[in-house]
Length: 219
Image (cartoon, rainbow, N blue to C red):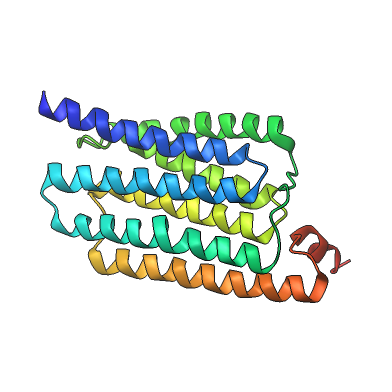
C-alpha cells in the first residue's frame, strides 16, 4: 500500500513536469517561460526528495538541495537579469506556431512511450513509469531549442532537457553518482552564464538576439 502511494506521488510529479514542458511550448512571453522552468524544477526537487526518502539514498537529498538552490532560485534570476540587460521581454517568435508546436509535442510524447515500452519490463522500481515521461521532456526541450528564435528561450529549452535527463537517471538507477550529478549541475550553470554573455554581446553587436538572423549571415 505504501509503495503504491509513493509510486503515485512520483508519477504525479513526473506528469506535472511534463505538463510544464507542454505549457512552455505554448508560451509566447519570456518571463512566464522562465517561471515555468522554475516550477518544473520544483516538481523535480519534490520527486527527488520522495525517491531519496523511499529508497533511503542520502546523496539524492543533496541533488534535491542543489536543484532548489540552482534551478529554482539562481538560474531563473540569472535569466531574468540577462533578459533585463538585453531589454528583451517581447513575444517569443515560434517557427511552428502554437498549434503546430503542441501537435508536435503530442507526437513526441507518443513516440517516447513507443521507444521506452520495451525497456519497462526490465525496470522493477516504483519510478519505472517516469522513463517515458523523461524522454518526452528531453524531446520537447529539444523541440524548443529548434523552434525558438531567441537565444534566451533556447537556453530554457536546454535547461528543461537537463531536467528530463535527471528524471531519467532517477527512474533508471535512483540517480547518477554524486560527483557526476554535482559536475552536471555546475556545467549547466556555467553554460547558462556563457550563453548569457554571448546573448549580451550579440545584442550589442546586432541589436537583436534572434538566432535566425545570425544564421542568415552564412548565406
